[in-house]
Length: 451
Image (cartoon, rainbow, N blue to C red; front, side, top):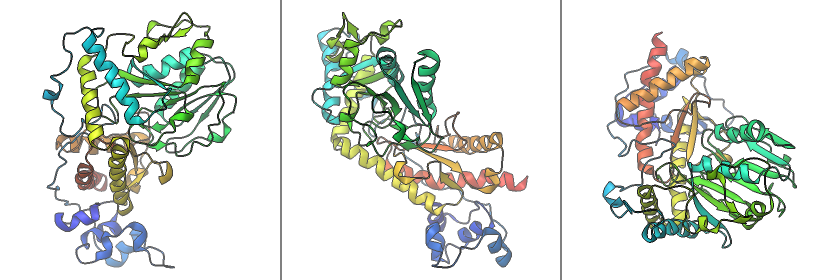
């Protein structure tokens, strides 16, 4: 569902320039106006430029774009915490172990249930262990970096903000010897082929701030003497991940399942356990990072015990999210919902000139945190501060309308939009959002035209 098709019912609009405004204004008369960008071009015939269309037809760009009438049922498109699952109600959490010690039989049973059901829904290898840890996904990654790295050479791959945090940890905090860093720009992946077969690996599966995900894992070669640490927080429950090739997998409840923040999930392979039990790092480890006692893995952590006190309310919400996930068909069902929303966005971008994906390669484009850049030349020619100001106005306009919240690009990423379409977001709400984006762009762009 794109802007050009919506214009049939909502009237004329202005967008990127006179040529496109002409197509929009005439869409009721010329069916090709609603066709994809590529479909308008005839074989062997170049597409007319916006300027040439304007000169030949002499039509001034129209800017009086009516507001769309249909609104998303849920306006939450934040990349974390993300939208709650459809049908969520606080009344669903009345069964939480309120006022009980997390060490009590009932509370510990709920923690163990969260662990066991996670393992079952994700279809993890039987000998992998799962634990609930402090400090969300960040805590889960860092407790493994501090506890495991330093035994062997390390290769770190990053291409977005949070992956670069692990680079900082390795270089400036841990100060690891023989540490190779490979960093890709926003929207593209680094060269994974440079990974050394004998080195530990740290990387992010899905770049929440860049809109890029890993699509090929052939570069991860089996080696029982190393560990592969994967920050998969915005990929778990949405993408196919070869868990058997990874030794540490981390994520948080606040991402794909729309849970509450502050709790991390840690998944360890037998190889990761071996590293913990055979390597003692030459650095102090705070309590929240300690997973061993007397040189042996603290097995209680993987049976429902926790390093510090968890929120039993948040645990209950996670259990209810797992109920919903099962009702949606488990991992395949959740992935299908995200894929459907991504397809809606791809169809819209194909028909819409003012916006493009930050990730140009569809093979590695994220189906959860989808990132965009403003392609309209009036905006693209602005400096970074000017582009950021434009996007801020666009986002604020839709927030004021109560249509969409928190969909600005991450503050360290290039200026643009970031729309979360993880499984808790209804694909129908993504469809309803798009005409509003077109309206907001046309409204804010009019200021540039008048300047």
